[in-house]
Image (cartoon, rainbow, N blue to C red; front, side, top):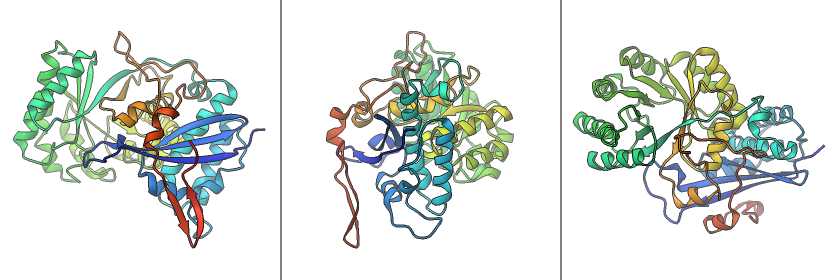
Length: 396
């Protein structure tokens, strides 16, 4: 049976990191090797701190480096991935960055197992086929309502029938500013003859747990037929979510990207009054944990939607989780890729003439990193403790 022979992390970054809400400016790429095949994954987390969790010296029996739970393990079936998943969580229970490291490793393990079995990941998850998804173009708000209006028009011109705007200065200034931003987004969609387009708004946790301030935005959200308000509050603020959900009417609440394991996401489903749960495979514990969240959402009648704002490698991983569920039809589609995120894979999951996204029918995730293109983004890193080299950037 194949055993995991190598586990490598690569810190990639743009030449300049800007102080904006764009997590695609750097990346932590994961490579796992076994049986002559290589699997790839991506962590949605601070790369350096996550590398540290992979190699840090043991503090005690429940605070071990993540790598010791993965290297040398057998990989022959989904049950092996579940076993490795449990082992990492047990051995690194008190290492808080471990879930982020596990997320990328878990994705790479599913990709690797798919290649070993010569099957797409979604089939390993038990789905017979992958249904097309309706992508919503995920964009940051423009600096002004006029900028947002133009972004909305451009998204509609590109054939997207669903768009989400978030972050920027939304929620940071006054009520009038936010009303103008939402109205501009809706007007831009309608002016491109997309009157039936879905519009979603992402507040990026800007109101903490202040229900009163968030409630002031409900009128404009309903007037502009906004489908959901995403992350009005901190991930843990379940009471605030519930209070707003009772008042929001036709505007549903969405959240979950801040969940670092399936238990946090499941509790949001149970106690936060959500209409949509969104988790990120690169944060929540990989495909294994995201699948558990999806199954819980199905059982509770909550719509499952991926959170993906980085590369198409991450997008493919996210879509595998709910590929065989046509009733969960929406998917987040990153719309403002940095050159790093764009070049991370040579192939992309392109939107077809009907405005739909399809998973590739290839083994594993169906996409490969473009190693030649991303070499220029690789950061040279060394981690030394007491003159002992714990980590050095490996050869890509």
